[in-house]
Amino acid sequence: MVPSDVFRDQPVLVGERVRLEPLGAANGEELIPRTVDMDPDVRRLSGTHREFTAEQLRTVFADWEQRHDRADWLIRSREDGTAIGDCALLDLDPDNAEAHYRIALNSMAHTGKGHGTEATDLVLEYAFETAGLHRVALEVFDFNTNAERSYAKSGFVREGVWRQHLRWDGAWHDAVLMSVLDHEYAEFRRRRG
Image 1 (cartoon, rainbow, N blue to C red):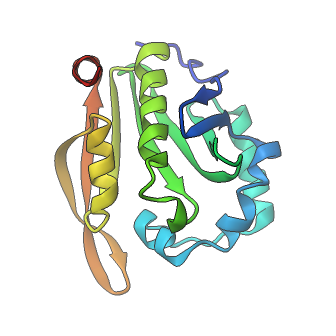
Image 2: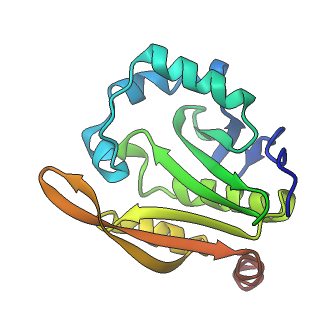
């Protein structure tokens, strides 16, 4: 069991390519233009049907600052300081030491450069080595094979499928379920060096 407030004061996480800053009302402003006017490819890859207004997003970001069942970060490029997306551990289950992971880069121009993989690596290090989680899980749509490969690079293992979980442009798509356990993560880190 992990404390239910384990995500209360998540730290800034820094890698070679990205800096993850706790996401809230102040820095969330940087994400609003790209989220309100979401890249159609990002919308599809993330399965986001819902559209957001700037005011809705301001409310959400302010709310996240008060919640302790999730840890949200703004992803910032270290190259130029640009806010390029966000990621989160959410749905904390303290009794089972589990949380779910999600990440979204706000433009296809930011994909394929290692930003998402490094952000995921930083969050997993925090999840297992600081927060003391046992399991981190996610879902990725079957057509997002680049993301599935990225998650595997960070140690996630494919464990199943939710069949026809997303309807997009009139077609049904499966959601691939992936997870990584604490001992798998430790072994993965040891092998990776």
